[in-house]
Length: 423
Image (tube, rainbow, N blue to C red; front, side, top):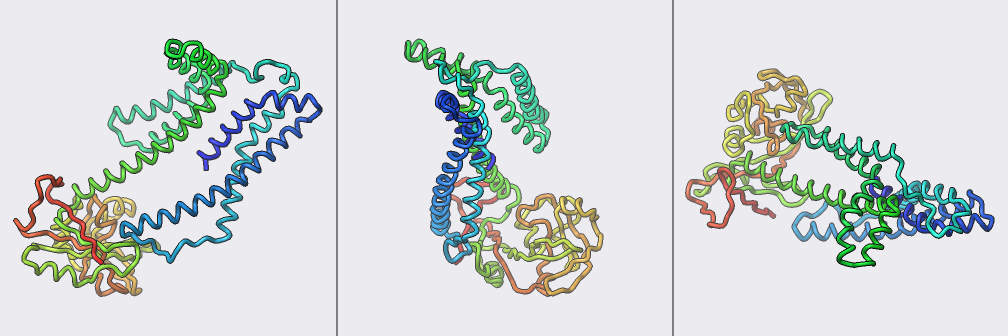
C-alpha cells in the first residue's frame, strides 16, 4: 500500500508538471481553481477504478498460478479450488480507488494553484530552485540513517530495530533532498553524454538539470521499485541462510522422512520403530506435534523420545539434560524460559488436550528452537493425553558405512540430510 501510494503520487505529480500550460490555459479561459482540482480528481478516480479492476483480475490469475506451482512441487494447499468472495472484490476495488484518490490529491491541488499567466510562458512554471531548508533537512535525515546502519555493523552489534529505522531514514532523506541530489547526479553522470552524443546528449543533460524536481520524482519511483526488489531478495537469502544454519547447526540425523503437503494426518506413528529395526539404521526418532496450555497461554509442542531426539538433534542445551528428561518433565527454549521467568527444576502446570493438568518439572533449557520449537515433552507422557497422533517427521541416524555420499555432494557439519517424500 505504501509503495503503491508513493508511486501513484509520483506519477500524477510528473503528469501535472508536464501539463502545466494546459492547466494554466483552463484558468485563463475562466475555469476556477476548484474546477481544475475537480477535473484532476475525476481523472484520478477513473484511473483508480480501471486499475483496481485490472489488479483484481491479475490477482486472481496470480493466485491460480501459485496454486498450480505448489501443486506441481507436491505441496497442495488446503483448498478445493480458488474461492472468490464478493466482499473481497468490493474491498479490493474500494482500497484501489481510495488509494489513488489520496495519492493524486496533492498533485490535484498543485494543478489548481497554477496561475493563468503560466499559459503564456515558454517554459514550465515549476521552480528550478530547491529551498535550502529542504536540502539541509534531507541531508541531516540521510546522514542519520546512514549512521544508524553503519555503526552497528562496524561495532558488530545486533540492533535490527535501529538498522530498520536507519533504512527508513535513508529513504526519507533521499526523497526530501532528492532535487538537490538529482542535479548533482545528472551533472556528474551526464557529463559523458556531451562527448558520446554531442548536442543531443548535452540537451538531455541540461533538460534534466533544469527541472530537478521532476527528475527527482521520476528517480524516486525507480528507487522505490529497486527497494522492493531488494527487500524480497534479502528475505529470500535470509530464508535460505536460516535453513542452511538449521541443517548445519541443529540437524545430526542422516535422513529425514517428512509428511508432504499442508493437509493429512501425518505419518504412521509405527513407522519410526519399523525403521529403527532395519540393519542400515542405528537410531530413529519420531517428532509428533501438538499443543498444550500453560496458564492462559497456548504453546505448540514437540513430543519425542528424549534419548533418541538428543542423539539426532543438537538444540544447544544450556541447562539440564535433554537425553535424561524424565516422564514428569519438559524442556523449553531459553527464550521462553526467560520470558516466563522459569528456572531449572521449577514445576510448571501444563494442561493437555484431554483437559487434564499435570505439574511438570523444567528438566532442560536449550537455545536452538528451529527443530524442537519452544516446548518439548517426552513421547511417553504425551501419548497418555493426546487426542490423536500427528507425527510429521521421522529423523533417522544410519549405521556407520551404510550411506556413501557421491564426491560432488555437499555435506554439512556432521551429516548429509536427505528428504524423502512420503505419500
